Image 1: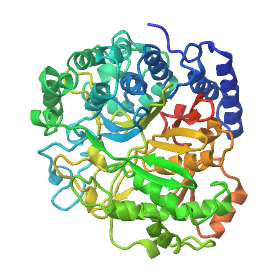
Image 2 (image 1 turned 135 degrees about the horizontal axis):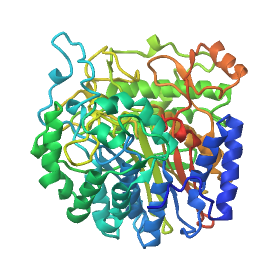
Image 3 (image 1 turned 45 degrees about the horizontal axis):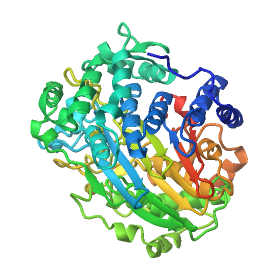
Image 4 (image 1 turned 90 degrees about the horizontal axis):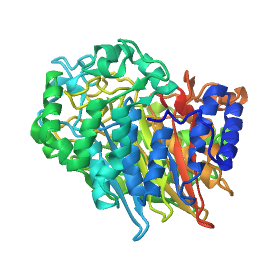
Length: 586
């Protein structure tokens, strides 16, 4: 096969221009030049020659982006391209997403303006019990939700891809999966991001189930350029291409999945796979400063939390979310929205959630009234009841697609932490998720990422764990933005900044949106996380004088992918976050 396109000459002058702009922005933010150049090329891939001039794709890997464009060239639509991009990412980004994971696809169909969220979130197996993860004293069993068969939920990505292709696409599954099958069978040269992540997770891969033989090179993390072949994954993709969802959820693949998971300590049954269902849900819709925003519905907390935060901020004039005075207000709005996330949100198929109240502007006004413009609100003044701890992954993938006709897709997919549960089930080549870790285990239990959750997100058979994945559309007089990112609970603040930054632009330029510095607050712990070296001393002093506790994280976070289509001339642009090369878009 051809080598990884990173480092090859750009194929159009528009791509060169985009690369230079990405380089300039990255230098302003202090990123390493070699990383900058690689991601400048990725960001510019949407400008490559021979792509539809009015279409745009942004994904975390150039091989996935290019495959999506080829599908559009073959007459496919945005939904077809979305299937292909997901399948290729499953091959080239197995540490972040894949057939063994789940996620959400946010869709807009141009012909009838239908907007829907395809919920392909993992479900808990029927035989799951809390006692599998918590001992008789209420103490979590070490690693039970993170490693091995117990950690894996029933995957939703294969069913989601089949659903998109059958209900919304134009091409056959065989056409859509062909690029991924070829890459899995023939191999591809891994990039530095893959090599870095594999090095960090070398211990998990060495001690995992079938992971060392696939992802390690002589029992060590592979170096950049290593040719990775995954023939078993290719065979599974072939079965899905031939039989659709039944190629994964029934028959030989399903049998191998069940036996492989249970040999690693799981409790899957054949019926868990056979009865897995995609759910189409109405997305969360709301307005902010004249724009219509459409985002993910529960069990993603993204749409509700974004709506609540922006509704609170409508009480103020936020010209720049990074101005110290505005940042204080944004932090206070996030503090209140995340508090309600902790108290109320979960899978609405299992628990009653007051969504209408939470996204109501009158409720937001009452929350805004408690904000002091000069002082941070102490967490004790907000905390009403004890809340349970739940971890949530920072390691997902997002991609955005818009085609010439105006069909669009925002997709955020995940297997949870890097390389998931460390289990490749049987001979399927499928690396399994550890999304059980996203459930609440009980009040006051320690967690990995300090994100809290309540009884609404407690473990139950067939239930879907709460998520922060937030694929989002923003429509205003300029056009439409499709945006999203990985990053666990930080996804919500990243998308929030993307919305505010976009609405503050008269002439849309996506690169400043995906490269701008970030901070984050999620109510508990009561700290403002900031990216290293991103904010000056005066900015920090201003927030600290208002009572905020700041914590500089040891590296930048996020791997935002955005596309925009203009109302005025129909032109499209795409941009990828240069941060993505730093250990896989943490």
